[in-house]
Length: 214
Image 1 (cartoon, rainbow, N blue to C red):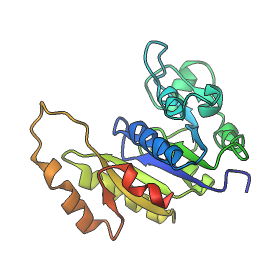
Image 2: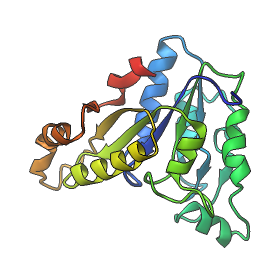
Image 3: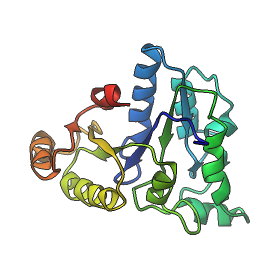
């Protein structure tokens, strides 16, 4: 295997659902257990010099010990899908680097946490989606979904796509966004309802509950 033999791919139902937050939590738990953790976001867009980026947050969770260009080799400024953001900078997303960037971690970490961009079916290059990348890396996957009205539909559609590609699904993390300004009664019943339709996939409230499976 050209990639680290132990790893997990953290995917989302959409953008801004808490993938990075949950990935950072998992990194910290594994580090506390004694693992040397690598973090890899193959491509990112919406990178601003004035804001903490997802790659920076992932690296910070690991004590800022890794070169940022290895955490995320391809970064683009515009807050649109990576292939479009790349085109706006007169370049393209390198598909060989999407996978090749994971090879650098081969002998440098005990476990590699890979974070996708956007949702499961979001394009990350001219011809690849997050799901294509997950299949190519062949790591078990954890799905992160925002705990709000609509999560059941979004999560089940994502699970169906991943099952169709025969990925090993460790669980679904219902990430609480903490928006107390909007009344959403579903946040109290989503876990029960999603569990009833998820066909034995664990539905949890924090990625920490899945750490023993990584």
